[in-house]
Length: 469
Image (cartoon, rainbow, N blue to C red; front, side, top):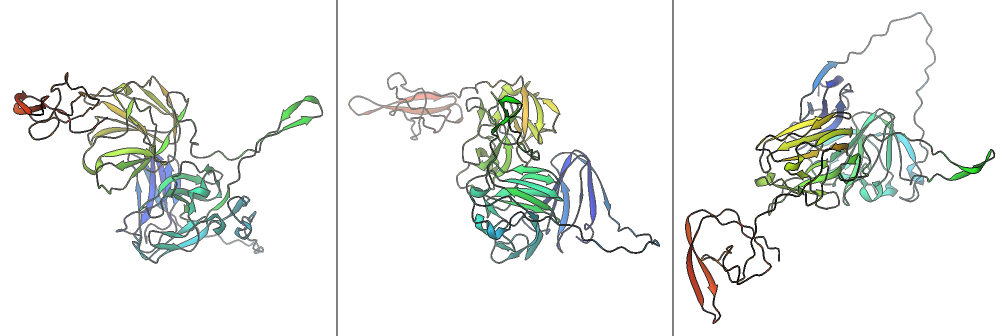
Protein backbone atom coordinates (compact mmCIF):
# COMPACT_ATOMS: atom_id res chain seq x y z
CA UNK A 1 0.00 0.00 0.00
CA UNK A 2 2.90 2.39 0.66
CA UNK A 3 3.76 2.30 -3.05
CA UNK A 4 0.33 1.70 -4.62
CA UNK A 5 -1.36 4.76 -3.08
CA UNK A 6 -2.08 7.41 -5.73
CA UNK A 7 -0.98 5.10 -8.56
CA UNK A 8 -2.90 5.58 -11.80
CA UNK A 9 -3.56 2.39 -13.81
CA UNK A 10 -4.62 2.56 -17.47
CA UNK A 11 -5.70 -0.39 -19.63
CA UNK A 12 -4.79 0.31 -23.26
CA UNK A 13 -6.18 -2.90 -24.80
CA UNK A 14 -8.26 -5.79 -23.53
CA UNK A 15 -9.70 -5.56 -20.03
CA UNK A 16 -8.63 -6.24 -16.45
CA UNK A 17 -9.74 -5.87 -12.84
CA UNK A 18 -8.01 -4.16 -9.91
CA UNK A 19 -8.07 -5.98 -6.55
CA UNK A 20 -6.89 -5.12 -3.03
CA UNK A 21 -6.58 -6.94 0.28
CA UNK A 22 -4.14 -8.31 2.82
CA UNK A 23 -1.63 -10.82 1.39
CA UNK A 24 -3.00 -13.81 3.31
CA UNK A 25 -6.70 -12.93 3.10
CA UNK A 26 -8.88 -15.63 1.53
CA UNK A 27 -10.29 -13.13 -0.97
CA UNK A 28 -9.46 -9.65 -2.24
CA UNK A 29 -12.10 -7.02 -2.92
CA UNK A 30 -12.52 -5.75 -6.46
CA UNK A 31 -11.79 -2.02 -6.77
CA UNK A 32 -12.49 -1.52 -10.47
CA UNK A 33 -12.99 -3.29 -13.80
CA UNK A 34 -11.17 -1.51 -16.63
CA UNK A 35 -11.96 -1.85 -20.33
CA UNK A 36 -9.66 -0.54 -23.05
CA UNK A 37 -9.07 3.18 -22.48
CA UNK A 38 -10.27 3.17 -18.86
CA UNK A 39 -8.11 4.36 -15.97
CA UNK A 40 -8.28 4.08 -12.19
CA UNK A 41 -6.58 6.14 -9.46
CA UNK A 42 -5.77 3.94 -6.46
CA UNK A 43 -7.03 5.25 -3.12
CA UNK A 44 -8.56 4.07 0.14
CA UNK A 45 -6.12 1.21 0.80
CA UNK A 46 -5.52 0.11 4.39
CA UNK A 47 -2.09 -0.45 5.94
CA UNK A 48 -0.81 -3.94 5.15
CA UNK A 49 -2.86 -4.35 1.98
CA UNK A 50 -1.51 -5.14 -1.48
CA UNK A 51 -2.83 -4.31 -4.94
CA UNK A 52 -3.02 -6.47 -8.08
CA UNK A 53 -4.27 -6.00 -11.65
CA UNK A 54 -5.46 -9.28 -13.19
CA UNK A 55 -7.37 -10.81 -16.07
CA UNK A 56 -7.98 -14.28 -17.44
CA UNK A 57 -6.78 -13.15 -20.87
CA UNK A 58 -4.16 -10.83 -22.39
CA UNK A 59 -4.32 -7.08 -21.79
CA UNK A 60 -1.97 -4.12 -22.22
CA UNK A 61 -1.56 -1.45 -19.58
CA UNK A 62 0.27 1.63 -18.39
CA UNK A 63 0.75 2.97 -14.89
CA UNK A 64 2.21 6.03 -13.21
CA UNK A 65 2.44 7.46 -9.72
CA UNK A 66 0.53 10.71 -9.58
CA UNK A 67 2.60 13.68 -8.45
CA UNK A 68 0.91 16.61 -6.72
CA UNK A 69 1.15 19.76 -8.78
CA UNK A 70 2.91 22.83 -7.38
CA UNK A 71 0.78 25.94 -7.83
CA UNK A 72 2.43 28.92 -9.50
CA UNK A 73 2.25 32.06 -7.34
CA UNK A 74 0.33 34.96 -8.89
CA UNK A 75 -0.27 38.52 -7.84
CA UNK A 76 -4.03 38.05 -7.92
CA UNK A 77 -5.56 38.59 -4.51
CA UNK A 78 -6.92 35.44 -2.96
CA UNK A 79 -10.61 35.07 -3.51
CA UNK A 80 -13.04 33.89 -0.92
CA UNK A 81 -13.21 30.08 -0.85
CA UNK A 82 -16.49 28.71 -2.16
CA UNK A 83 -17.19 25.12 -1.08
CA UNK A 84 -18.13 22.63 -3.77
CA UNK A 85 -21.83 21.88 -3.55
CA UNK A 86 -22.74 18.40 -2.41
CA UNK A 87 -25.62 16.22 -3.54
CA UNK A 88 -28.70 17.05 -1.49
CA UNK A 89 -30.71 14.00 -0.45
CA UNK A 90 -34.20 13.94 -1.92
CA UNK A 91 -35.36 12.02 1.13
CA UNK A 92 -33.53 11.08 4.30
CA UNK A 93 -33.50 7.53 5.62
CA UNK A 94 -35.57 8.65 8.61
CA UNK A 95 -38.70 9.16 6.51
CA UNK A 96 -38.22 6.01 4.45
CA UNK A 97 -40.58 3.77 6.40
CA UNK A 98 -40.45 0.56 4.36
CA UNK A 99 -39.93 -1.07 0.95
CA UNK A 100 -43.30 0.23 -0.27
CA UNK A 101 -42.84 3.73 1.13
CA UNK A 102 -39.42 4.94 0.15
CA UNK A 103 -39.10 7.66 -2.46
CA UNK A 104 -35.95 7.88 -4.64
CA UNK A 105 -32.89 8.85 -2.61
CA UNK A 106 -29.68 10.58 -3.68
CA UNK A 107 -26.66 11.04 -1.43
CA UNK A 108 -22.90 10.70 -1.16
CA UNK A 109 -21.43 7.31 -0.27
CA UNK A 110 -20.25 7.04 3.31
CA UNK A 111 -16.78 6.05 4.44
CA UNK A 112 -17.36 2.60 5.95
CA UNK A 113 -15.21 0.54 8.30
CA UNK A 114 -15.66 -3.23 8.63
CA UNK A 115 -14.56 -4.33 12.14
CA UNK A 116 -13.98 -7.96 13.10
CA UNK A 117 -16.47 -8.84 15.86
CA UNK A 118 -16.77 -12.60 15.31
CA UNK A 119 -15.20 -15.11 12.89
CA UNK A 120 -13.81 -15.95 10.34
CA UNK A 121 -12.81 -12.30 9.50
CA UNK A 122 -10.71 -13.16 6.39
CA UNK A 123 -9.73 -9.50 5.72
CA UNK A 124 -7.94 -8.89 9.03
CA UNK A 125 -9.02 -6.87 12.04
CA UNK A 126 -10.52 -4.03 9.98
CA UNK A 127 -11.27 -3.10 6.38
CA UNK A 128 -12.21 0.23 4.84
CA UNK A 129 -14.04 1.59 1.81
CA UNK A 130 -16.94 3.74 0.63
CA UNK A 131 -20.43 2.32 0.19
CA UNK A 132 -24.12 3.07 -0.14
CA UNK A 133 -25.68 2.86 3.31
CA UNK A 134 -29.26 1.67 2.88
CA UNK A 135 -32.14 2.83 5.12
CA UNK A 136 -32.72 0.46 8.04
CA UNK A 137 -36.42 0.39 7.11
CA UNK A 138 -35.45 -1.68 4.05
CA UNK A 139 -34.20 -4.51 6.32
CA UNK A 140 -30.60 -3.78 5.37
CA UNK A 141 -27.83 -5.33 7.47
CA UNK A 142 -24.22 -4.64 8.40
CA UNK A 143 -23.02 -8.20 9.10
CA UNK A 144 -20.82 -10.36 6.89
CA UNK A 145 -18.16 -13.04 7.49
CA UNK A 146 -17.67 -12.06 11.13
CA UNK A 147 -17.45 -8.33 10.41
CA UNK A 148 -19.75 -5.56 11.58
CA UNK A 149 -19.80 -2.62 9.18
CA UNK A 150 -20.24 0.94 10.44
CA UNK A 151 -23.29 1.27 8.17
CA UNK A 152 -26.05 -1.00 6.85
CA UNK A 153 -24.45 -1.62 3.45
CA UNK A 154 -26.10 -4.98 2.58
CA UNK A 155 -29.60 -4.90 1.05
CA UNK A 156 -31.58 -8.19 0.92
CA UNK A 157 -32.71 -9.57 -2.44
CA UNK A 158 -36.38 -9.33 -1.48
CA UNK A 159 -36.04 -5.53 -1.43
CA UNK A 160 -33.20 -5.06 -3.91
CA UNK A 161 -34.92 -6.74 -6.87
CA UNK A 162 -35.69 -4.21 -9.63
CA UNK A 163 -33.98 -1.37 -7.74
CA UNK A 164 -32.26 1.06 -10.12
CA UNK A 165 -28.91 2.40 -8.93
CA UNK A 166 -27.19 5.37 -10.59
CA UNK A 167 -23.77 6.89 -9.93
CA UNK A 168 -23.81 10.67 -10.39
CA UNK A 169 -20.11 11.31 -9.71
CA UNK A 170 -17.08 9.10 -9.16
CA UNK A 171 -17.42 5.36 -9.75
CA UNK A 172 -18.62 2.31 -7.86
CA UNK A 173 -19.31 -1.40 -8.31
CA UNK A 174 -22.43 -3.42 -7.51
CA UNK A 175 -21.92 -6.82 -5.84
CA UNK A 176 -24.23 -9.69 -4.85
CA UNK A 177 -23.95 -12.91 -2.89
CA UNK A 178 -25.05 -14.73 0.24
CA UNK A 179 -24.08 -12.90 3.45
CA UNK A 180 -21.49 -15.48 4.54
CA UNK A 181 -20.14 -16.42 1.10
CA UNK A 182 -16.35 -15.90 0.95
CA UNK A 183 -16.75 -13.65 -2.10
CA UNK A 184 -19.56 -11.77 -3.84
CA UNK A 185 -19.97 -11.70 -7.60
CA UNK A 186 -19.56 -8.46 -9.53
CA UNK A 187 -22.82 -7.31 -11.17
CA UNK A 188 -21.80 -3.99 -12.70
CA UNK A 189 -19.23 -1.21 -12.62
CA UNK A 190 -20.84 2.23 -12.75
CA UNK A 191 -19.05 5.36 -13.89
CA UNK A 192 -20.50 8.83 -13.45
CA UNK A 193 -23.80 9.10 -15.34
CA UNK A 194 -24.45 5.36 -15.66
CA UNK A 195 -27.05 3.21 -13.92
CA UNK A 196 -27.91 -0.43 -13.30
CA UNK A 197 -31.21 -2.22 -12.62
CA UNK A 198 -30.81 -5.09 -10.16
CA UNK A 199 -31.97 -8.45 -11.60
CA UNK A 200 -31.21 -12.15 -11.23
CA UNK A 201 -30.70 -12.35 -7.46
CA UNK A 202 -31.15 -15.59 -5.53
CA UNK A 203 -33.54 -15.63 -2.58
CA UNK A 204 -30.97 -15.42 0.23
CA UNK A 205 -28.56 -13.00 -1.42
CA UNK A 206 -27.74 -9.39 -0.54
CA UNK A 207 -26.33 -6.59 -2.68
CA UNK A 208 -23.89 -3.81 -1.90
CA UNK A 209 -22.61 -0.79 -3.83
CA UNK A 210 -18.98 -0.05 -3.01
CA UNK A 211 -16.12 2.11 -4.24
CA UNK A 212 -12.47 2.61 -3.39
CA UNK A 213 -13.07 6.35 -3.03
CA UNK A 214 -15.97 8.74 -2.52
CA UNK A 215 -18.82 8.69 -5.05
CA UNK A 216 -22.31 10.18 -5.29
CA UNK A 217 -25.33 8.08 -6.13
CA UNK A 218 -29.09 7.93 -6.51
CA UNK A 219 -31.40 4.95 -6.30
CA UNK A 220 -35.06 4.12 -6.63
CA UNK A 221 -37.14 1.01 -6.04
CA UNK A 222 -40.33 2.51 -7.41
CA UNK A 223 -41.98 0.74 -10.38
CA UNK A 224 -41.53 2.45 -13.72
CA UNK A 225 -44.36 4.77 -14.61
CA UNK A 226 -46.70 3.64 -17.37
CA UNK A 227 -47.05 6.34 -20.03
CA UNK A 228 -50.61 7.69 -20.41
CA UNK A 229 -52.33 9.15 -23.43
CA UNK A 230 -53.03 12.89 -23.23
CA UNK A 231 -55.28 14.77 -25.68
CA UNK A 232 -53.89 17.66 -27.70
CA UNK A 233 -55.74 20.77 -28.76
CA UNK A 234 -54.54 20.47 -32.33
CA UNK A 235 -55.86 17.00 -32.95
CA UNK A 236 -58.72 14.79 -31.92
CA UNK A 237 -56.35 11.82 -31.75
CA UNK A 238 -54.59 11.10 -28.46
CA UNK A 239 -50.85 11.70 -28.32
CA UNK A 240 -48.74 9.32 -26.30
CA UNK A 241 -46.91 10.99 -23.42
CA UNK A 242 -43.15 10.76 -23.68
CA UNK A 243 -41.66 9.12 -20.58
CA UNK A 244 -38.68 10.80 -18.93
CA UNK A 245 -35.49 9.22 -20.19
CA UNK A 246 -33.10 7.55 -17.79
CA UNK A 247 -29.45 6.58 -18.04
CA UNK A 248 -28.79 3.43 -20.03
CA UNK A 249 -27.87 0.49 -17.74
CA UNK A 250 -24.30 -0.71 -18.02
CA UNK A 251 -25.39 -4.34 -17.89
CA UNK A 252 -27.89 -5.91 -20.25
CA UNK A 253 -31.28 -6.41 -18.57
CA UNK A 254 -32.07 -10.09 -18.16
CA UNK A 255 -34.87 -10.30 -20.68
CA UNK A 256 -35.15 -12.64 -23.64
CA UNK A 257 -33.03 -15.69 -22.82
CA UNK A 258 -34.18 -18.33 -25.35
CA UNK A 259 -31.40 -18.68 -27.97
CA UNK A 260 -33.80 -20.37 -30.40
CA UNK A 261 -36.16 -17.36 -30.44
CA UNK A 262 -34.37 -14.22 -29.18
CA UNK A 263 -32.41 -11.81 -31.38
CA UNK A 264 -30.29 -10.87 -29.54
CA UNK A 265 -30.34 -13.35 -26.67
CA UNK A 266 -29.40 -12.44 -23.09
CA UNK A 267 -27.36 -14.58 -20.73
CA UNK A 268 -28.55 -15.98 -17.40
CA UNK A 269 -26.72 -15.65 -14.08
CA UNK A 270 -25.31 -19.10 -13.36
CA UNK A 271 -23.68 -21.09 -10.58
CA UNK A 272 -21.39 -24.07 -11.26
CA UNK A 273 -21.91 -26.35 -8.24
CA UNK A 274 -19.72 -29.31 -7.36
CA UNK A 275 -21.89 -32.38 -7.98
CA UNK A 276 -19.92 -35.04 -6.10
CA UNK A 277 -21.35 -36.43 -2.83
CA UNK A 278 -20.09 -34.44 0.14
CA UNK A 279 -18.23 -31.89 -2.01
CA UNK A 280 -18.00 -28.48 -0.31
CA UNK A 281 -16.11 -26.65 -3.06
CA UNK A 282 -17.19 -23.05 -3.63
CA UNK A 283 -19.52 -22.32 -6.54
CA UNK A 284 -18.14 -20.80 -9.73
CA UNK A 285 -20.20 -17.76 -10.69
CA UNK A 286 -20.69 -16.18 -14.12
CA UNK A 287 -23.49 -15.99 -16.69
CA UNK A 288 -24.21 -18.20 -19.70
CA UNK A 289 -26.38 -18.76 -22.74
CA UNK A 290 -28.63 -21.69 -21.80
CA UNK A 291 -29.94 -24.11 -24.46
CA UNK A 292 -32.89 -26.54 -24.57
CA UNK A 293 -32.22 -29.57 -22.37
CA UNK A 294 -32.29 -32.00 -25.31
CA UNK A 295 -29.49 -30.15 -27.10
CA UNK A 296 -26.90 -29.33 -24.43
CA UNK A 297 -25.41 -30.76 -21.25
CA UNK A 298 -26.02 -29.37 -17.74
CA UNK A 299 -22.59 -30.46 -16.49
CA UNK A 300 -18.95 -30.51 -17.56
CA UNK A 301 -18.20 -34.23 -16.88
CA UNK A 302 -14.83 -33.31 -15.37
CA UNK A 303 -13.27 -35.17 -12.43
CA UNK A 304 -12.91 -34.44 -8.73
CA UNK A 305 -14.01 -31.08 -7.37
CA UNK A 306 -13.96 -29.74 -10.94
CA UNK A 307 -17.07 -31.82 -11.71
CA UNK A 308 -19.83 -29.20 -11.88
CA UNK A 309 -23.53 -28.94 -12.72
CA UNK A 310 -24.89 -25.52 -13.68
CA UNK A 311 -27.89 -23.87 -11.97
CA UNK A 312 -29.65 -20.52 -12.20
CA UNK A 313 -29.98 -18.15 -9.24
CA UNK A 314 -33.40 -19.69 -8.53
CA UNK A 315 -32.06 -23.27 -8.54
CA UNK A 316 -33.21 -24.27 -12.03
CA UNK A 317 -30.80 -26.59 -13.84
CA UNK A 318 -29.29 -24.92 -16.91
CA UNK A 319 -27.87 -26.55 -20.06
CA UNK A 320 -25.00 -24.37 -21.34
CA UNK A 321 -22.61 -27.04 -22.70
CA UNK A 322 -23.31 -27.26 -26.44
CA UNK A 323 -22.61 -30.45 -28.37
CA UNK A 324 -20.61 -30.86 -31.58
CA UNK A 325 -23.39 -29.03 -33.45
CA UNK A 326 -21.80 -25.80 -32.14
CA UNK A 327 -19.22 -26.04 -34.94
CA UNK A 328 -19.85 -23.16 -37.34
CA UNK A 329 -21.95 -21.11 -34.91
CA UNK A 330 -21.23 -17.39 -35.36
CA UNK A 331 -21.41 -15.34 -32.16
CA UNK A 332 -21.46 -11.53 -32.11
CA UNK A 333 -21.26 -9.65 -28.80
CA UNK A 334 -24.01 -7.04 -28.47
CA UNK A 335 -23.50 -5.91 -24.86
CA UNK A 336 -21.21 -6.86 -22.00
CA UNK A 337 -18.12 -9.05 -22.15
CA UNK A 338 -18.45 -12.49 -23.74
CA UNK A 339 -16.20 -15.54 -23.40
CA UNK A 340 -16.45 -18.47 -25.84
CA UNK A 341 -15.10 -21.85 -24.76
CA UNK A 342 -14.18 -24.55 -27.31
CA UNK A 343 -13.15 -27.87 -25.79
CA UNK A 344 -13.30 -31.64 -25.55
CA UNK A 345 -16.01 -32.50 -23.06
CA UNK A 346 -14.75 -33.78 -19.70
CA UNK A 347 -11.19 -32.50 -20.07
CA UNK A 348 -9.30 -29.76 -18.22
CA UNK A 349 -8.05 -28.06 -21.39
CA UNK A 350 -9.96 -25.61 -23.61
CA UNK A 351 -9.58 -22.58 -25.85
CA UNK A 352 -10.93 -19.18 -24.81
CA UNK A 353 -12.02 -16.38 -27.15
CA UNK A 354 -13.09 -13.12 -25.43
CA UNK A 355 -15.39 -10.70 -27.27
CA UNK A 356 -16.26 -7.08 -26.61
CA UNK A 357 -19.43 -5.48 -28.07
CA UNK A 358 -19.30 -5.48 -31.87
CA UNK A 359 -16.74 -8.30 -32.10
CA UNK A 360 -17.59 -11.71 -33.63
CA UNK A 361 -16.22 -15.24 -33.52
CA UNK A 362 -17.20 -18.39 -35.42
CA UNK A 363 -16.87 -21.54 -33.33
CA UNK A 364 -14.49 -23.93 -35.08
CA UNK A 365 -14.01 -27.21 -33.24
CA UNK A 366 -10.70 -28.96 -33.82
CA UNK A 367 -10.68 -32.73 -33.08
CA UNK A 368 -10.87 -34.07 -30.43
CA UNK A 369 -12.91 -31.00 -29.43
CA UNK A 370 -16.62 -31.81 -29.38
CA UNK A 371 -18.35 -28.98 -27.56
CA UNK A 372 -18.53 -25.28 -26.78
CA UNK A 373 -20.06 -22.82 -24.33
CA UNK A 374 -20.95 -19.12 -24.52
CA UNK A 375 -20.36 -17.50 -21.12
CA UNK A 376 -18.60 -14.52 -19.54
CA UNK A 377 -15.78 -13.95 -17.10
CA UNK A 378 -16.18 -14.80 -13.41
CA UNK A 379 -18.62 -12.48 -11.63
CA UNK A 380 -19.23 -10.37 -14.76
CA UNK A 381 -22.79 -9.09 -15.26
CA UNK A 382 -25.28 -10.30 -17.85
CA UNK A 383 -24.34 -9.98 -21.53
CA UNK A 384 -26.19 -10.36 -24.83
CA UNK A 385 -25.18 -11.83 -28.18
CA UNK A 386 -26.62 -12.33 -31.64
CA UNK A 387 -26.27 -15.79 -33.16
CA UNK A 388 -26.07 -17.07 -36.74
CA UNK A 389 -25.82 -20.62 -38.10
CA UNK A 390 -26.38 -21.83 -34.56
CA UNK A 391 -29.27 -24.32 -34.72
CA UNK A 392 -29.25 -26.75 -31.78
CA UNK A 393 -29.36 -30.48 -32.48
CA UNK A 394 -30.21 -33.44 -30.25
CA UNK A 395 -27.34 -34.83 -28.22
CA UNK A 396 -26.03 -38.31 -29.12
CA UNK A 397 -28.13 -41.06 -27.55
CA UNK A 398 -26.55 -42.90 -24.63
CA UNK A 399 -26.37 -46.69 -25.05
CA UNK A 400 -28.95 -48.46 -22.88
CA UNK A 401 -30.67 -51.78 -22.47
CA UNK A 402 -33.99 -52.96 -21.03
CA UNK A 403 -33.28 -55.25 -18.10
CA UNK A 404 -35.01 -57.87 -16.03
CA UNK A 405 -35.34 -57.78 -12.26
CA UNK A 406 -34.12 -61.41 -12.41
CA UNK A 407 -30.95 -60.74 -14.40
CA UNK A 408 -27.78 -60.53 -12.32
CA UNK A 409 -24.09 -61.27 -12.36
CA UNK A 410 -22.41 -63.57 -9.92
CA UNK A 411 -21.25 -60.58 -7.81
CA UNK A 412 -24.82 -59.28 -7.51
CA UNK A 413 -24.52 -56.37 -9.92
CA UNK A 414 -26.83 -55.88 -12.87
CA UNK A 415 -26.03 -57.11 -16.36
CA UNK A 416 -27.31 -56.11 -19.77
CA UNK A 417 -28.74 -58.25 -22.55
CA UNK A 418 -29.43 -61.34 -20.42
CA UNK A 419 -32.82 -63.01 -20.96
CA UNK A 420 -33.96 -59.68 -22.31
CA UNK A 421 -36.71 -61.17 -24.40
CA UNK A 422 -38.24 -63.14 -21.53
CA UNK A 423 -38.14 -60.36 -18.96
CA UNK A 424 -38.97 -56.99 -20.44
CA UNK A 425 -39.30 -54.49 -17.59
CA UNK A 426 -39.07 -50.69 -18.03
CA UNK A 427 -35.78 -50.43 -16.16
CA UNK A 428 -32.75 -48.92 -17.87
CA UNK A 429 -29.27 -48.81 -16.39
CA UNK A 430 -26.08 -47.28 -17.69
CA UNK A 431 -22.85 -48.97 -16.67
CA UNK A 432 -19.30 -47.75 -17.35
CA UNK A 433 -16.85 -50.04 -19.00
CA UNK A 434 -16.22 -53.11 -16.84
CA UNK A 435 -13.02 -54.88 -17.99
CA UNK A 436 -12.73 -57.36 -20.88
CA UNK A 437 -12.53 -61.09 -21.53
CA UNK A 438 -14.04 -62.17 -18.23
CA UNK A 439 -16.41 -65.04 -17.62
CA UNK A 440 -19.42 -64.13 -15.56
CA UNK A 441 -22.43 -66.09 -14.44
CA UNK A 442 -25.83 -64.97 -15.63
CA UNK A 443 -28.35 -66.25 -13.10
CA UNK A 444 -32.06 -66.48 -13.86
CA UNK A 445 -34.97 -67.77 -11.82
CA UNK A 446 -36.87 -70.70 -13.33
CA UNK A 447 -40.61 -71.08 -12.92
CA UNK A 448 -40.23 -73.36 -9.86
CA UNK A 449 -38.08 -70.80 -8.04
CA UNK A 450 -34.72 -72.55 -8.44
CA UNK A 451 -31.74 -70.70 -9.86
CA UNK A 452 -30.16 -71.80 -13.10
CA UNK A 453 -26.72 -70.50 -14.00
CA UNK A 454 -24.93 -70.25 -17.29
CA UNK A 455 -21.36 -69.07 -17.86
CA UNK A 456 -20.98 -66.44 -20.58
CA UNK A 457 -17.91 -64.56 -21.81
CA UNK A 458 -18.32 -60.80 -21.47
CA UNK A 459 -16.17 -58.44 -23.55
CA UNK A 460 -17.47 -55.11 -22.25
CA UNK A 461 -20.20 -54.24 -19.82
CA UNK A 462 -21.52 -50.71 -19.65
CA UNK A 463 -23.35 -49.11 -16.86
CA UNK A 464 -23.84 -49.13 -13.05
CA UNK A 465 -26.61 -47.93 -11.99
CA UNK A 466 -28.89 -45.12 -13.04
CA UNK A 467 -32.50 -46.22 -13.00
CA UNK A 468 -35.15 -44.58 -15.10
CA UNK A 469 -37.96 -46.60 -13.56
